[in-house]
Image (cartoon, rainbow, N blue to C red):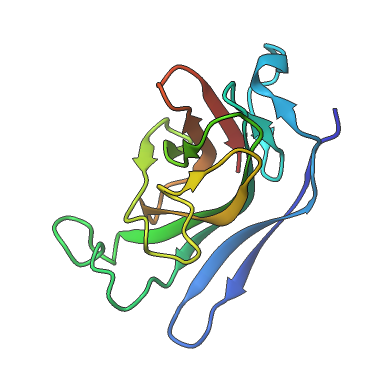
Length: 173
């Protein structure tokens, strides 16, 4: 199976936005249906397409952290989520429904090297939005899934739980 070539870099964002870590795909792995994966394949690489048993083919295209959120966003100014210790992150997805019924896009989390999980944040933080959108048969969408994560977290995996909570898919970041 061909693996993905990934470029990792720090980009200086526009003035006042700080630095953003971006992972971008330059070559993608061929799609893998969940039922066809062998036990020795723990996770696809970013850019690798995986399909759940309902036919939802998911391809993470990029992972960004330390990005500026819209001015109306208050997640980092409320409660214990201080901008000094937390940051916004997002995963850009391409989702295609190869199944026979409409399916909503949800169920993602980021996992750090210590096994801690960070769930999805407000779905409207970044446009176009992927979270909560329904993808009909033979339709596809491209959009973002937002997260709020600790600045020191070493994110290693994008985790997906298919509707019904039975099947999981993972991508190494």
